[in-house]
Image (tube, rainbow, N blue to C red; front, side):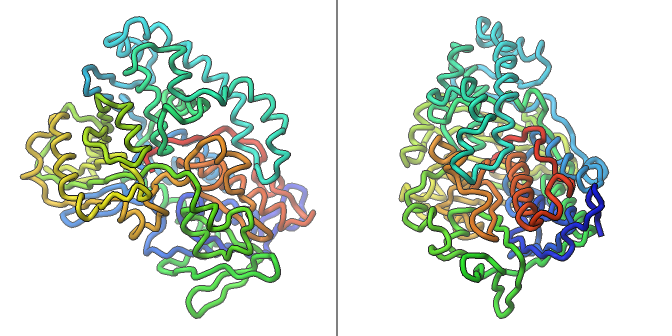
Length: 526
């Protein structure tokens, strides 16, 4: 039995069910187990990780399903440390330099690096005057981050939180009336340079022309703290978390679907899985909010998020995915991460936002074998290709469009030097928005969850404490999407839940979960 710092008993007599073994569910399970809670983690799939898993396809090709890199791994290291472990003993993370290669269809390119001298030189190649402001951008965002990180670390389950000291202190630095692009115009005149520090809003499935300006901290964090590749793929992190959870006594049940949450009065008291009913002191739901909450929780227990409100919620975009196993090599110029930015980027983004399928799309390519030889058989290449597209609210007929869009994407890849790959494809899987909905249980195929506009953030986003005995974690709840942000959300959820279960016996801080930690924010594609 774990002991709190003052010697009182921990929560070893309490039971919590966590539904979903994605990143948020795994992190929450670890933190609850550290506090002495008996945790049952239920996952419908045969493996943990949700979309943060790495799969092996026929022929020995390996692919990350969703996220393809780690940003700001300190947050995960903190969680492992809370559990008495070192992250580096479980997962090998390779820091990438260059972090990625930006290619502008209209001309020019940038090899993104956190070496400021080299980065200034890269920017100067296409916009000499803008290069002079690179360091000022980072200095200003360092200050912005300092004041905003306490906001991301706090819970927003009461309206009073909107006027918390941290929030009031941060407001002058956030400029909520500006978009990311508008904020960047203060530093950079060349639209290509602005894109180099703005395309990261796509990690949230949003447009830099609409996304709130506080999210300039995304690109800042990449350069300040690095972009990392977990050896073996991002699924290696999920598997490491599950392995540690099992050693800490978490009961992980795979291939088990939860039918519904059960309640006694207003309080969640367990779940139904087929013919089995499991009782608990509390339930945590980790999943795509707009999909799973409607399936598992009746409207009477979610008065602030009834079906009608969920149906009207603003959603992120979707993605058209191609997972390609290729015989032979690809050009040496194709690095680990390549972002190809459309010449008509503003129009491209506008089309996606308005529900029109772009015919001149931007795209992202991961060639993990550039760094990690274990991602494909010897002499072969695994390519992950992502194209932002509208979600299913657009009404696009994907069964009729799928093949022609595949052809369009292959043609676009030729602009990156991938001119001869089609005849060498030995494995291919396409995931369009309908598969995100049907195979991965993503509401309307919106792969980045609820949009991160001002009226769907903080207090206005689904709360970590959703109701008596009922908690949420994941990209659809506060603080939002992206692996590090989801891990931060897991700390908020675990802290609130431990406080409820404690009833004065031992608080979250005594159980080993600090109430203030370094910021984590978004940094991946899904």
